[in-house]
Amino acid sequence: MSNENTPQKTTIGELRYLKSLSEEIGESLRSQREILKKRGMSLPPMAIQTLSSIEGDLKSLERAVLEDQTELGQLRALADTTALISTTLDLDMVLHQAMDVVINLTGAERGYIILVDQDTGELDYRIRQESELLPQQGGSGIPQISQTILREVLETGDPLLTDNAYKDERLQGNVSIANLSLRSVLCVPLKYKGTTIGVVYVDNRLRSGLFEAREKNLLVAFANQASVTIENARLYSRIQLSLAEISETKELIDNVFASIGSGVITTDAEDNVTMYNRAASQILERPEDKSINQPVGSVLQGVSSELNSHLATVRETNERQLLEAEMEMPVRGRIAVSIKLNPLKDAMNKTQGVALVLDDLTEKKQRDETIASVKRYLPPELIDNIHAISQMGLGGERREVTCVFIDVRGLSTFPAEFRPPQIMEMLNLYLSRATACVHRVKGVIDKYMGNEIMALFNTQLNPMENDHAVQAVIASLDVRDAFLALYKELGISPDPHFYRIGMHTGIATLGNVGSLSRREFTALGDTINSSKRLEENAEAGQIIISQDTYDTIHAQGLPEGIRFEDGGALQVKGRVQKIPIYEVFRA
Image (cartoon, rainbow, N blue to C red; front, side, top):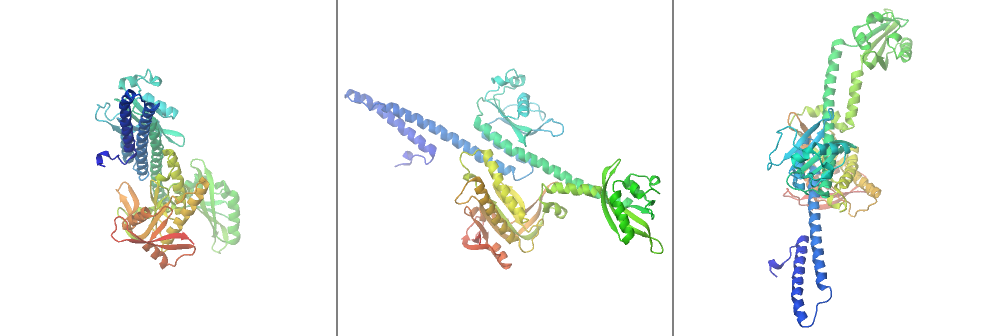
């Protein structure tokens, strides 16, 4: 049979081939019907009608398959966009690229991402993508779009889809819509934790009926992920501001203490104040003339009960005491102080009173509370080592690391009926379980790449002298156990399991990349690439390590409770020689 008569090896091709055969058969039956009639014969009853019904069914099936393929293409593009959004905090660049994808998928003429200013409540037209086919108005100011539609979505928090805004009964009488000649309009809210923080708006001023429920669902899914990304970027900016304030606060504290010193108060045997320096006056907001000859308990109000006990101990034991307390000041409010109590002796070495040295800990305590708050959002190792990392500048250093890539679950493994929001929710569940396992053994998450995690062991953030490869293996086995528990919670028994894990140990370059104004700590080199290739070549449910990782572990003595099986060698992309591998199990 020639190529001309061979149906295309695709679903659409086969349907069209069947449709053409049906049409040929129908045409042949209709031509034969007259011949049979002349001979006193007839076709079977309903033959022509049945064939016509089949032709109609084939056409309907073809339309349904085309719609499914279109939706599948949109979902794949959405997944790629989601992965792109998750890889960086450079918000404007990512959203510009994502909006290009949205406009391409929906067929929109224009698209905007509009945010509500958190302080003023005004609208910030953050991202603009406008066709050059029609003249634009307004320059760099407010674009010519319906403010009524924007207000409706912002106030209700519900998507708005109209296939002909000019004739839509909901929008009748709106002057801006009539003046702008809007046709197809789709506007969906950007929501974060139930609060509408902006909208995504697309329209077409030339075509009616361009957007359907499918485009609305696609844009809603995109908006859900974009909302998280926007808030993450805002949170990251606030954390950076907090870190800058921490540095400024520390510098201020250093300057203050260098210039005024500690507060010093001395007492006599009856615990009345005999000396009171300027620093004490500033700390306690109490002038010297109102403190001298006064009981020290009245000067240090709010800590008299504890203070009396410590004063008695100093006099009885002649030993130094330390007291930390908080007091309420008229101007500064609540302050924290450290009070060191030392025996004050005369020439006969007899205790005559007590010397109290006050250090103001208020700023330090506030700084520690701020750092503790920051640590809830960033890995603790990053905060603890932030000064050392910042001193590295751009570039980095070469050091041995173990790199692990974890594919938590492929997108193709989700049920066909799952919508993008369901897929995102499930992916975040898998990613959170794997992240907890990595952090438990002090691994550092370098980045999330859609449904994958890149983790590093023995970086400057989490130095591990000799056991980084072992800790990486432990983390991987913990991920397997966590996923088995998750499968049980979800009531599924995947066979094979969904995850794939690959790791490699070797030299990589670790340090800062970016610019002087913004930088990112990461790792580069063949070690990282090889880890990724091993993960890509792992079978579902496999944990595979390279020969180098195995040798690093073996040099320290193979750990108990872990079993390694020789897996031969893999030929991976980008390498001439094969990589010997081992598969890892719990013993």
